[in-house]
Length: 198
Image (tube, rainbow, N blue to C red; front, side, top):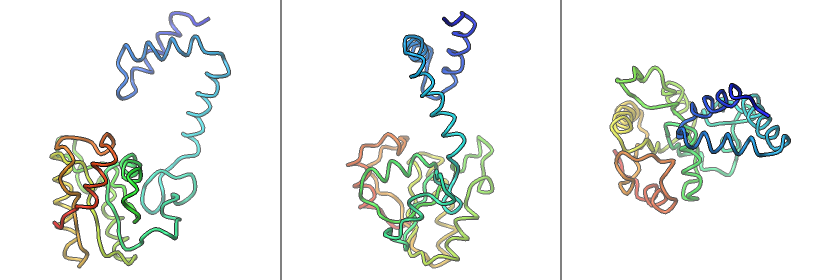
């Protein structure tokens, strides 16, 4: 049985996870205490395996277990379009809609002067290299509809337009201040289909 010190350590570690408050941490900790040792081992091994085997795609910076992610390796994707998102989880949200069949580019965040994140800290240079090397005709900017996302979208549009590539933005329909990760498939799918030029 776990000592109070072990239990407190588990509660502290669970509490560091995003979206897990003290009550959720308690529920998870007590569930793990009541679970058999094999279930706890499977969870611990799954965490270790993800940390060991999952990294960023060398081309688009999505999550991958090989050099490139499955989307970049899929020859059936529309290779004339790149959808630019802030985080890998946004790729998952857009893929769930089934409305988009092009490629992606993950910035690794958004421009946020308050957090001291400028264009240099993001994968913008790599995006521009892709635009020079690949036959991309449209860049769809799918950053979150908040101040940082809009700032990033404006910066990207100003940077990409002179290259002669069409730049579009997801249409309204997504709530301002919301995250793509939490948007339902119908809303996100309509936003992709009704994107507008910048």
